[in-house]
Length: 155
Image 1 (tube, rainbow, N blue to C red):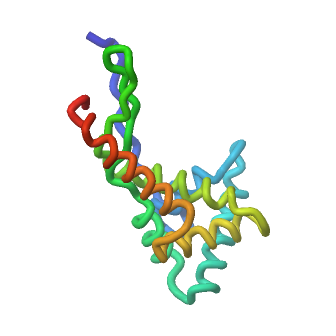
Image 2 (cartoon, helix red, strand yellow):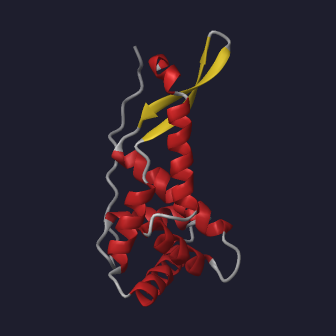
């Protein structure tokens, strides 16, 4: 029996400006080296840019983008009998949102040109319109899970 205590999962607190948990999760993932204020500036600039380009509520666009990028199935490598299989597994909503945020930020960092705020705003708008690098990543993950459906019994 394990002697380690099980810690409860922490629920993300809402951020002070937009009062939204998703924004706080995004800020925490953007920040590098503890520079949370810089991450907040980047995100606020991106949301202002989204509002200027679309004319809609930026939080609505953000929720729509994360919803479109969130996967509901992923593949995990399992080693069974000396060989490694890609086993498709359903993932929860919190893990799915974390993956979606990671993919959105990775796609925004890949975009060359102006800066992180502009790249993030373009990626959010593209994801809300159901195209872009992050949406392709989700579709690729779903395709891999579909292709490896035969190994689903290895869960």
